[in-house]
Figure 1: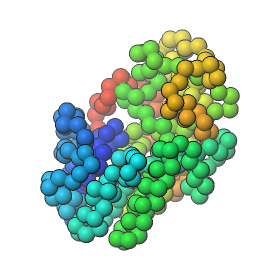
Figure 2 (figure 1 turned 45 degrees about the vertical axis):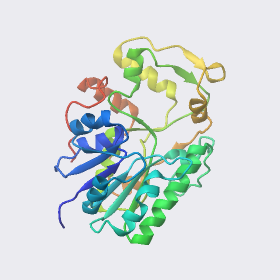
Figure 3 (figure 1 turned 135 degrees about the vertical axis):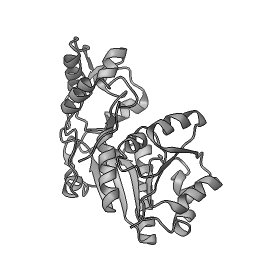
Length: 301
């Protein structure tokens, strides 16, 4: 097997975490819509390319050499932007391609009234964005079958990590303890998104995988725990009914489920942060919770 060469469509927060975990030094290229973000991608170890819905010659050249394709771009009204722009290139002009990873969301399951769901559960998307995600997942899986390549769908829960967490929210004064009785959410640290992606890519494994922690929990508990780690008083509880929320934020509370992660564990992956307490404690110890970037690359066993 020759050298693995990675290409990330949509090299944002999760894509940069993936690149920082590149302990083997594999070549990684990634796209952003903003030229101002090129330097941040370089800092994470990604060769930056500009993608705003149309393939450039540079992207076409890179795709021809790509062995592992990671897609982290949300669908829109016109469908999946990557498939729309690069579908034919993926089918006919990527001779080295071995594997595709698509970052999706547990939002595809919709509301299950707090019940446990796994990868076999019915997708009952509530929001329009999740309806579009279900369609995009199916298109990527169909493309994989068409070209005979494994496609891994990673359904992610609420993403957090350095710079995006309850510790940082408490310090900057944006943390709130919204209480809706019975409501729980799963979460996933960006290092475990990276770890799961590397694990699946290195084994060229396809299928649907919930990439989420072991412990769905009420959101107000996470804020209270973070406050305890910082030695400050937790913000007061706010009843959900009276809270001022954006329509998108309110929509998240319209979906209640506990998401199981047996499939990725059965594939051999072991979570670095199985619950929010372990992650918050580690970020507090490493003193990297304020930063958008961890201080050092994640080492994988």
